[in-house]
Length: 486
Image (cartoon, rainbow, N blue to C red; front, side):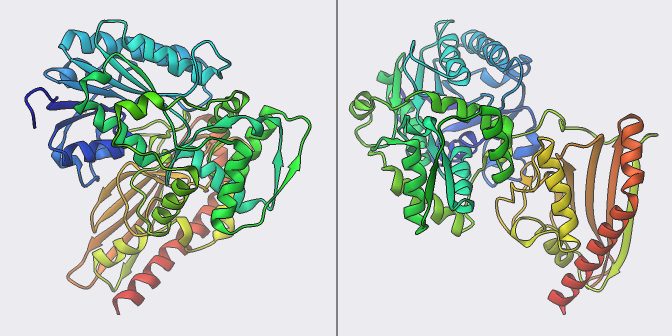
């Protein structure tokens, strides 16, 4: 590595969609990589994490920034809010100010920022306007900033691609309103990663705003049509003269895994053309030849079919009503356990229960799980449509239907935290305790911390259904594990 090239790199947002893919590529390229995360435990199960320095910190709270930035040559700022939350713009601005000050104080030589598309001063949604403002704030303390303004990112697990995929797959007649006539220039995720990584080798990109996009521009309705053509699906459009943002975002929240708090800002961005002028990117990055949209879709579908999705938008999404929580053994925590002896080793039982969810479903009483998911979707929750990243592999910190994997002990334990809307906090723990080489004890425990009277009424009102579901689930895990072992 040339002496002039940055060596120690900080990646913020390493638990997110782009950061989780960029960090291992930088490690493979020979850089010393640091990662800043609010929940470092969510990186623990990743195969590349042991080769990186992991720092616990929060850009909004200005925690851990000085330690993470000390001695760094360059830093990637990949932190932003996708949810339609009150005060999100002020939070993004405060986070950027904290990071810019800390980077300058640490003597960091460069900041590389992945922002949103659009021209300054043009018609922009609140979220895109906030992205541009963040870029300006990051450069306000004198550290040179490379701001890459990317169009819609197309890749397996990206939120915009998943929204298109589910709409086209599930709707033979697609509602089409005027907003679908605006232009977009979608970009393959592999091209985004190439631009980000190559910035380190190109000091001439410092202090610039560079638009990056795919090789083709399309109206949003054409993005849906092209996806259908790639998949060999016949789809028609129902022309609508008017549309309501709240109704449309709620509809997407019910039809796709994307909750309406994500769907709303995505729909708001459709109000303006956001095609890119990629001439500057072509001059500065001649080695990158962006894919066209149809090809990017094909690559994404191949990744999905091979169960080779590296990261997903779901890994970074933690609803405001389901923040991380640490267990406390205290009054007010309700627990309900089912214990079974199983004639199979703990590793075999672990393989069964760690493969739950997604396309396999929940093994027992599936209609009850779907009924609960529908109720959750109707009140604005996540439901069960996020699925899982891989049918057989499970990692700490990733999403699993309406749950978050909070802890994994290989061949022993899996703890899930509920991310559905509940009048309290809930967990579901699966544990296989060895009893010799060919037997173990399965302990399936549901934990619930009720919030007030409504939480207690909820738990005891649904206790018969929970007892039925969890007992049946434990028995089905036993049956499958013994069948696979014997």
